[in-house]
Length: 342
Image (cartoon, rainbow, N blue to C red):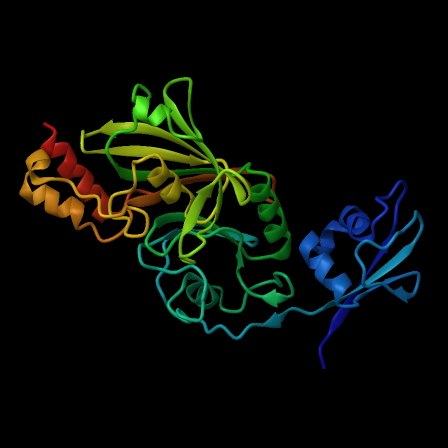
């Protein structure tokens, strides 16, 4: 028989007219119930108002209404724990920051049931997890593609999950990626200035503003749109130029699936090694020599690394920032480009 706790809420003065919004304001912070969790509990019949079960989040409430929420004890999930080494940059009772290696999938899926970051975290935590969304699991608030390396933060508690999710939703998390792209984005390039969604900010930073949505025919890809889809903004600054390629810093204002990869392809500067969005673009041997051209054209993944991550700790309120060095495959390719440009 499952255990449960009852969270009692008295609706305060001037509440929102809807139950879900009123609860989001008045539920005790210690209950660690996010808006999405509250919505699920209402729909599941776990919420009563003045003794009557209410399953509609839009139901009206008033000041002084007594709301009781039945919260089931967090249950163990079936995903197996696996002893996989992790590069941990920070850990406390509420969250953990990981430098994810190339090739690791973040979350189990039908085609990848094991070997993921979640499998590794379950082993690392050894059962020392609070309930996240009603399950004892790591709270994945953002993801990094399998073949992209770098930093991501994972919640260990419901209160951290809720706080981090809000920061990602309001775009206050600082995320900087390093990438190697084809060609050199240049503010003086008339071709670039003529592309829809492109603008330049003071200092020559390239701003790409579009909508993104799943591709109509290829469900594994994202596509640039200007109507529909989800708003997406990427800022790009060249840090080193090599003629045929450039090292760029990409700052995410939003964090959509494949955002940097599809935005860079949209402006004609797709990432080196990107098999999904890079097309058949190749660098000629005449430009850099046969050996380097072979390395650039044969790079086995998108040359993209989540190098910097900053956010406010959702419990302590402390501002945290982390950096992770570029992985060896990218740094070696960068050194080769530097050597060829001397």
